[in-house]
Image: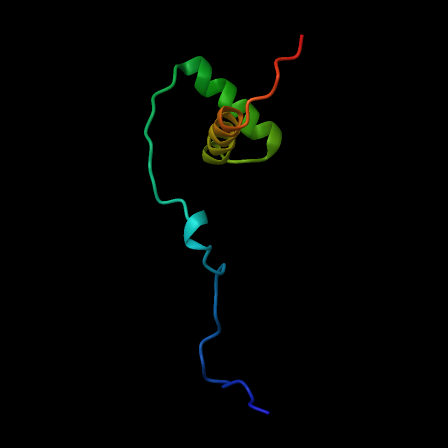
Length: 73
């Protein structure tokens, strides 16, 4: 049985994501003060960062485009 090296530096941090899940592309957009306020409120209510909320909203919109549902009447 091989024992761990006590002098080796411990691995730190989160393990890397698979390449398909790495977020490497950047998009910059401008918001109105009202839109920023609404986004900030949503982030506060959900305990997320502004970036996470924006990412989730974009992902939801893209999912809707790829998988359109019947409009409920």
